[in-house]
Image (cartoon, rainbow, N blue to C red):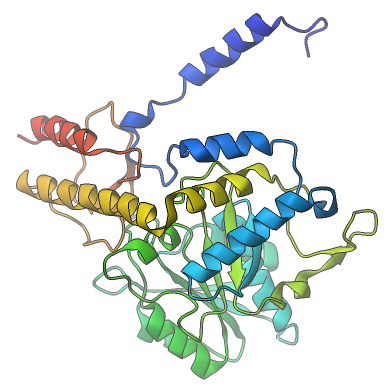
Length: 366
């Protein structure tokens, strides 16, 4: 620390210089986060000091969290769903596996069935919870192979995981079939819809992935991705509103005497921001945003293939992958584990940026 501090002008000059070193979002095609909606920014500022870790001190903010879960629960065909706002998909996935484990404490060496395409948060969760992670192959469409998943189940399996909008290829696993498998085997079924949960419901022909399928136990979704909220805001939803009580610990010096959340201090600002966006845009507004992102995704795929750069998969959501190794330097892209170019058409990526990218990459591949 500086002994005498800094003037405000000096301080903000220093901070602005650091901020200028961040990448220009216009050229970021690799992130599953986007610029927050203006109403999210405004709502966030209203709730900067709120802490949902001690909800009795902030009853209004706690009410907004309940409304957010109710809104998303209705979107997922279960307005009465339980749940809470997390820091994002990693926490939501960890908590889901923790619920699955604690429901089956009698199993001494539990295992979890996850697809090869699962987010790396599941590896972390299994390490923390001492769970065996059994990885299931992808089929030819880069979705989870349901028959392989079924074959890997045994008496020590406590959970099946399916992905609705895979991070690398933008695919939705066969959630309906997995739901049936989970029901038949009476196994906890968690759907990681961190990305796809705010895309699939707004597509023209949404594939079932949510509580409309009776085998689905929990769902993770991140409003700070396609929900255009401020960071961090994820949600974990449960079919049974009382399920989370399994995780309760005593909190004698707070305004509530038990809590099931993972984090103690939990910011209320991004929760207010997430609810603000959903209520401001409504179903029609979200459909418009998703429609635009999908239009850009399809244009990107068509444009790349016109250049002779073939797609690696035909995605269900706004992620596009290609057999390509060269990209213009100014564009920030990413690569899958299989070495495919990966691009995400988020709301901050507009049509003119897609055309600009296609023009730049066309010069390389001419």
